[in-house]
Length: 126
Image (cartoon, rainbow, N blue to C red; front, side, top):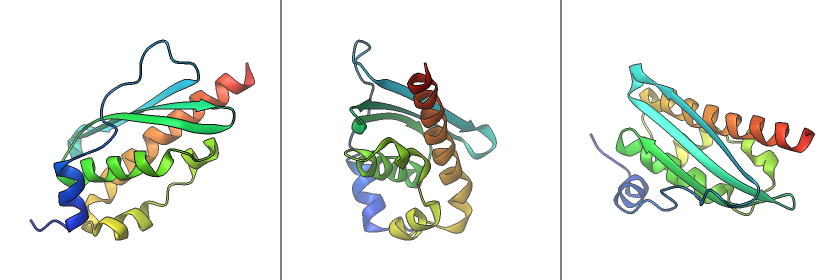
């Protein structure tokens, strides 16, 4: 399979991999998986004063998935929390030059972000 230069770069040197410290304030997490697609994604997002300060992730999947999660984590940092609901998977697929058959994996990334957003909303409401 051919990979775009962006996928090769991000797969070879993914940023923001790992976990945030357990004692950090404002951390929410969300995960999604699809065993039939061999994909699992978990994000941790630190939200302070209405801004996403840090993002870390864990991922199991193909090089396309790893590159996409790396891109999303970078994109989120510095954004408002509502960005958790604003990922455009079509744009992401184009940006990374992903084959159409990878769209299901991108949708799991979107699901993990929605889970983060849901947890954040629960935290804000309480």
